[in-house]
Length: 85
Image (cartoon, rainbow, N blue to C red; front, side, top):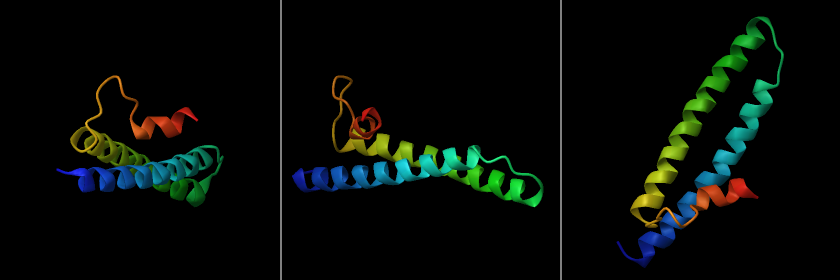
């Protein structure tokens, strides 16, 4: 694993963090809806899918950071830097 792999991992982590941010915002919006009937069912289904996607994105980010970016406990992961803003 060379510098090129590390650079690609950084780009992928940043893209995943951007997507994670968008999904989190969408989920918050869905959770704030007070819907009834078939509309409520559609919202619950989309929210459930987003929750699964968010967990998967976080897992991928963590794996990339551990494998390619060699993040120790002292270094703040790229994915957490965005959340700290």
